[in-house]
Length: 164
Image (cartoon, rainbow, N blue to C red; front, side, top):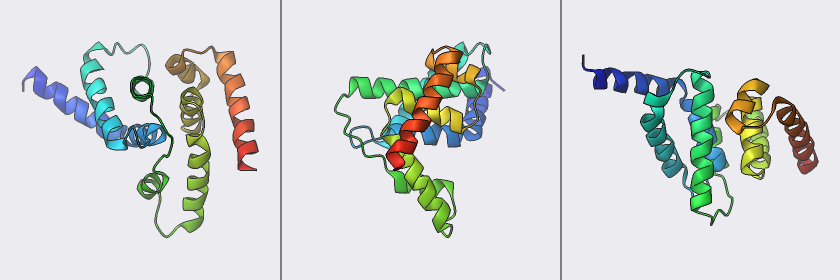
């Protein structure tokens, strides 16, 4: 088997393993000016281009988060016409059973609140909800451990206040 075939096979397996994370990140940063499909393809391209430079200094999941979030944030900087409007219903359909009305509503509510956060706050709270350590969140965001803890606390208050 050629090296390029091995790389492709490993890449496809990695994408399959982390598909949920990638989709959540892209959904949270998607908008009318940044369609989910475009963000997802951009993230996949950046992961493919960067996989050879992954040195294993962090967990692969942390590197994937960092690449996905940076790709989405960069997209919004390049295309500053961001108007909000995350396709919440489409995301909820991929996460839970259509018959579980209560769970669907709870997820819709929390994702709607998260979608209103600024890009850094979205990244922090999404990783925290995915049970990433403060160390991993620090690595992805470039914030100190203490700053991550403070931001999480403030984001929780903000979400609680916004929920009414």
